[in-house]
Image 1 (spheres, rainbow, N blue to C red):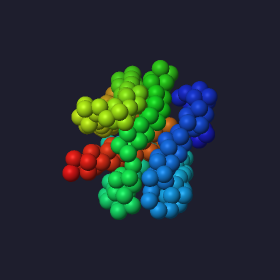
Image 2 (cartoon, rainbow, N blue to C red):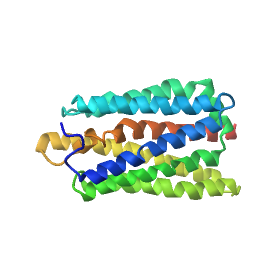
Image 3 (cartoon, one colour):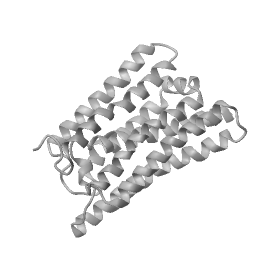
Length: 236
């Protein structure tokens, strides 16, 4: 098996590998900063967990676990779904997580989503014909819009604008729906590819772009749920 996917120039794969750790450091930094106790330990635990998760995803990829065509795609079965269940069922309900959410200002939680600029790689994949334009442009521009608007929403919160809270509810809902739409479209394109042999989302099961479904959907949904919890805390 080739080290990098052959569907794209190597420089794109290398660039992706350089930027994909950025969200993890940002998330770990926020968690550690607003942890009431063991700030450095919290930071380290988040980093180590995701480092091990990325290693697991890479191992699974090179073992060919994601290669078989299926519905849902094998990469969702082995990475996205397990991580989502782990984050929502266990991590989301830990007292430590609830404490961090309580201590972290809402604007910080929103501004964290600037890392979704990495979603522009969906657009790059589409431009290089590695992904269908439908999912490449919809997912890519959805992520970019969510990332850029997070700065304006966070600023409105910091300035105490009267419309800041409803705006946050609307922005947060758009951001999480974008993830669900992307996942649904990936399922649809996979089924279509299996039936007709058309271009599907196979590149997202190849190294290094397997890290996108392995990390992003579950983590982003978790972060949006944290914002909902914060909004409900403040309402209460």
